[in-house]
Amino acid sequence: MKAATVSEAMATRLSVRAFLPEPVPLELLQRVLRKAARAPSGGNLQPWHVTVLTGAPLAALLEKVAVRQREMPKGEAAEYPVYPNPITEPYGARRFKIGEDMYALLGIPRDDREARRAWFARNFEFFGAPVGLFCFIDRNMGLAQFSDLGMFLQSLMLLLREEGYDSCPQEAWSMFAPTVYAALGTPAERMLFCGVAIGKRDPEAPVNRLVSDRAGLEDFVEFVGF
Image (cartoon, rainbow, N blue to C red; front, side):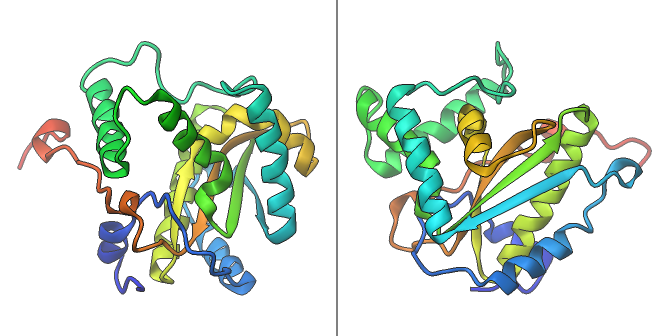
Protein backbone atom coordinates (compact mmCIF):
# COMPACT_ATOMS: atom_id res chain seq x y z
CA MET A 1 0.00 0.00 0.00
CA LYS A 2 1.40 3.38 -1.01
CA ALA A 3 1.65 6.38 1.31
CA ALA A 4 -0.05 9.49 -0.10
CA THR A 5 1.49 12.03 2.29
CA VAL A 6 4.68 12.48 4.28
CA SER A 7 2.63 11.99 7.44
CA GLU A 8 1.32 8.65 6.15
CA ALA A 9 4.83 7.57 5.19
CA MET A 10 6.08 8.43 8.68
CA ALA A 11 3.16 6.64 10.34
CA THR A 12 3.49 3.45 8.27
CA ARG A 13 7.28 3.16 8.12
CA LEU A 14 8.50 0.18 10.14
CA SER A 15 11.81 -1.57 10.52
CA VAL A 16 10.53 -4.55 8.58
CA ARG A 17 12.16 -7.87 9.47
CA ALA A 18 10.34 -10.27 7.16
CA PHE A 19 9.97 -9.62 3.43
CA LEU A 20 8.15 -11.09 0.48
CA PRO A 21 10.41 -12.39 -2.34
CA GLU A 22 8.87 -9.98 -4.87
CA PRO A 23 11.62 -8.21 -6.88
CA VAL A 24 12.08 -4.45 -6.64
CA PRO A 25 12.29 -2.76 -10.07
CA LEU A 26 15.61 -1.08 -10.89
CA GLU A 27 13.87 2.04 -12.18
CA LEU A 28 12.03 2.44 -8.87
CA LEU A 29 15.29 2.21 -6.92
CA GLN A 30 16.90 4.73 -9.25
CA ARG A 31 13.96 7.08 -8.81
CA VAL A 32 13.86 7.01 -5.00
CA LEU A 33 17.65 7.29 -4.68
CA ARG A 34 17.68 10.27 -7.02
CA LYS A 35 15.01 11.95 -4.91
CA ALA A 36 16.69 10.99 -1.61
CA ALA A 37 19.85 12.73 -2.79
CA ARG A 38 17.95 16.00 -2.24
CA ALA A 39 18.39 15.39 1.50
CA PRO A 40 20.24 18.23 3.26
CA SER A 41 23.92 17.98 4.13
CA GLY A 42 26.22 20.51 5.76
CA GLY A 43 28.00 22.52 3.09
CA ASN A 44 26.23 20.36 0.49
CA LEU A 45 28.96 17.73 0.93
CA GLN A 46 26.54 14.89 0.09
CA PRO A 47 28.88 12.44 1.85
CA TRP A 48 26.95 9.25 1.06
CA HIS A 49 28.10 6.44 -1.22
CA VAL A 50 25.69 3.60 -1.98
CA THR A 51 25.92 0.08 -3.39
CA VAL A 52 22.67 -1.78 -4.15
CA LEU A 53 22.54 -5.55 -4.73
CA THR A 54 19.95 -8.09 -5.74
CA GLY A 55 19.82 -11.54 -7.32
CA ALA A 56 22.98 -13.62 -7.66
CA PRO A 57 25.41 -10.90 -6.49
CA LEU A 58 23.42 -10.42 -3.30
CA ALA A 59 23.19 -14.17 -2.70
CA ALA A 60 26.96 -14.54 -3.18
CA LEU A 61 27.70 -11.80 -0.66
CA LEU A 62 25.30 -13.25 1.91
CA GLU A 63 26.95 -16.64 1.57
CA LYS A 64 30.38 -15.11 2.25
CA VAL A 65 29.03 -13.37 5.33
CA ALA A 66 27.35 -16.59 6.50
CA VAL A 67 30.72 -18.35 6.39
CA ARG A 68 32.35 -15.57 8.42
CA GLN A 69 29.49 -15.66 10.89
CA ARG A 70 30.08 -19.32 11.56
CA GLU A 71 33.78 -18.59 12.06
CA MET A 72 33.28 -15.41 14.10
CA PRO A 73 29.78 -15.36 15.61
CA LYS A 74 30.50 -12.11 17.48
CA GLY A 75 31.55 -10.37 14.28
CA GLU A 76 34.76 -9.05 12.84
CA ALA A 77 36.31 -5.72 13.89
CA ALA A 78 33.37 -3.27 13.90
CA GLU A 79 34.05 0.12 12.36
CA TYR A 80 32.30 2.07 15.13
CA PRO A 81 30.26 1.42 18.30
CA VAL A 82 26.58 1.18 17.43
CA TYR A 83 25.56 2.00 21.02
CA PRO A 84 27.27 4.05 23.73
CA ASN A 85 29.13 2.09 26.39
CA PRO A 86 27.94 2.40 29.08
CA ILE A 87 24.43 3.17 27.91
CA THR A 88 22.61 5.41 30.39
CA GLU A 89 18.92 5.90 31.12
CA PRO A 90 16.39 6.34 29.68
CA TYR A 91 18.19 5.00 26.61
CA GLY A 92 19.07 1.61 28.05
CA ALA A 93 15.47 0.96 29.06
CA ARG A 94 14.22 1.91 25.60
CA ARG A 95 16.68 -0.44 23.93
CA PHE A 96 15.78 -3.26 26.31
CA LYS A 97 12.04 -2.85 25.80
CA ILE A 98 12.08 -2.87 22.00
CA GLY A 99 14.15 -6.05 22.09
CA GLU A 100 11.80 -7.75 24.53
CA ASP A 101 8.74 -6.64 22.55
CA MET A 102 10.23 -8.11 19.37
CA TYR A 103 11.17 -11.46 20.93
CA ALA A 104 7.72 -11.70 22.52
CA LEU A 105 6.12 -11.44 19.08
CA LEU A 106 8.53 -14.11 17.84
CA GLY A 107 7.74 -16.37 20.79
CA ILE A 108 11.40 -16.56 21.85
CA PRO A 109 11.84 -16.48 25.65
CA ARG A 110 14.68 -14.57 27.26
CA ASP A 111 16.50 -17.71 28.39
CA ASP A 112 16.59 -19.23 24.88
CA ARG A 113 19.87 -17.64 23.90
CA GLU A 114 20.45 -19.96 20.96
CA ALA A 115 17.14 -18.97 19.35
CA ARG A 116 17.88 -15.29 19.97
CA ARG A 117 21.31 -15.61 18.37
CA ALA A 118 19.76 -17.40 15.39
CA TRP A 119 17.24 -14.59 14.97
CA PHE A 120 19.94 -11.92 15.24
CA ALA A 121 21.82 -13.72 12.46
CA ARG A 122 18.88 -12.93 10.17
CA ASN A 123 20.28 -9.39 10.06
CA PHE A 124 23.00 -10.73 7.80
CA GLU A 125 20.46 -12.23 5.42
CA PHE A 126 18.76 -8.82 5.07
CA PHE A 127 15.77 -10.57 6.66
CA GLY A 128 15.00 -12.21 3.32
CA ALA A 129 14.64 -8.91 1.46
CA PRO A 130 15.14 -9.08 -2.32
CA VAL A 131 17.39 -5.99 -2.25
CA GLY A 132 20.27 -5.12 0.04
CA LEU A 133 21.69 -1.61 0.10
CA PHE A 134 24.99 -0.61 1.69
CA CYS A 135 25.68 3.00 2.69
CA PHE A 136 29.30 4.11 2.96
CA ILE A 137 31.07 7.31 4.01
CA ASP A 138 34.60 8.56 3.36
CA ARG A 139 36.86 7.95 6.35
CA ASN A 140 37.99 11.57 6.48
CA MET A 141 34.45 12.71 7.28
CA GLY A 142 33.44 13.62 10.84
CA LEU A 143 30.51 13.22 13.22
CA ALA A 144 28.50 15.95 11.52
CA GLN A 145 28.56 13.99 8.26
CA PHE A 146 27.11 10.95 10.04
CA SER A 147 24.02 13.09 10.68
CA ASP A 148 23.93 13.83 6.94
CA LEU A 149 23.77 10.08 6.28
CA GLY A 150 20.83 9.84 8.67
CA MET A 151 18.90 12.50 6.78
CA PHE A 152 19.65 10.80 3.46
CA LEU A 153 18.58 7.39 4.75
CA GLN A 154 15.40 8.70 6.36
CA SER A 155 14.50 10.42 3.09
CA LEU A 156 15.10 7.16 1.24
CA MET A 157 12.93 5.14 3.61
CA LEU A 158 10.03 7.59 3.41
CA LEU A 159 10.25 7.68 -0.38
CA LEU A 160 10.12 3.88 -0.42
CA ARG A 161 6.91 4.03 1.64
CA GLU A 162 5.49 6.50 -0.88
CA GLU A 163 6.05 3.82 -3.52
CA GLY A 164 4.52 1.07 -1.36
CA TYR A 165 7.82 -0.55 -0.37
CA ASP A 166 9.45 -1.17 3.00
CA SER A 167 12.89 -1.16 4.54
CA CYS A 168 14.99 -1.93 7.58
CA PRO A 169 18.09 0.14 8.38
CA GLN A 170 20.78 -2.13 9.88
CA GLU A 171 23.84 -0.74 11.63
CA ALA A 172 24.59 -4.36 12.59
CA TRP A 173 26.25 -4.75 9.19
CA SER A 174 29.24 -2.82 10.54
CA MET A 175 30.13 -6.03 12.43
CA PHE A 176 31.14 -7.68 9.17
CA ALA A 177 32.49 -4.67 7.32
CA PRO A 178 35.78 -6.35 6.23
CA THR A 179 33.90 -9.14 4.45
CA VAL A 180 31.62 -6.61 2.75
CA TYR A 181 34.65 -4.59 1.59
CA ALA A 182 36.32 -7.68 0.14
CA ALA A 183 33.16 -8.83 -1.62
CA LEU A 184 32.35 -5.43 -3.13
CA GLY A 185 35.85 -4.16 -3.79
CA THR A 186 35.16 -1.12 -1.62
CA PRO A 187 37.88 1.56 -1.86
CA ALA A 188 40.04 1.71 1.27
CA GLU A 189 39.04 5.32 1.93
CA ARG A 190 35.39 4.37 2.48
CA MET A 191 33.79 3.05 5.66
CA LEU A 192 30.59 1.02 5.88
CA PHE A 193 27.94 2.85 7.88
CA CYS A 194 24.96 0.51 7.55
CA GLY A 195 22.95 -1.82 5.41
CA VAL A 196 19.31 -1.32 4.43
CA ALA A 197 16.97 -4.19 3.57
CA ILE A 198 14.46 -3.19 0.87
CA GLY A 199 11.33 -4.93 -0.39
CA LYS A 200 7.69 -5.47 0.52
CA ARG A 201 6.78 -6.57 4.01
CA ASP A 202 5.32 -10.00 4.66
CA PRO A 203 1.93 -9.14 6.20
CA GLU A 204 1.66 -12.58 7.81
CA ALA A 205 4.95 -12.38 9.74
CA PRO A 206 4.36 -11.71 13.46
CA VAL A 207 7.56 -9.65 13.75
CA ASN A 208 6.10 -7.08 11.36
CA ARG A 209 3.46 -6.26 13.94
CA LEU A 210 6.17 -4.66 16.06
CA VAL A 211 5.57 -0.95 16.54
CA SER A 212 8.15 0.75 18.71
CA ASP A 213 7.16 3.16 21.48
CA ARG A 214 7.90 6.86 21.19
CA ALA A 215 8.54 9.27 24.05
CA GLY A 216 6.03 12.06 24.61
CA LEU A 217 6.87 15.66 23.76
CA GLU A 218 7.28 16.41 27.47
CA ASP A 219 10.23 14.01 27.53
CA PHE A 220 12.31 15.69 24.84
CA VAL A 221 10.95 19.13 23.93
CA GLU A 222 11.16 22.50 25.68
CA PHE A 223 9.05 25.34 24.27
CA VAL A 224 10.37 28.79 25.12
CA GLY A 225 8.60 32.09 24.51
CA PHE A 226 5.27 30.66 23.39
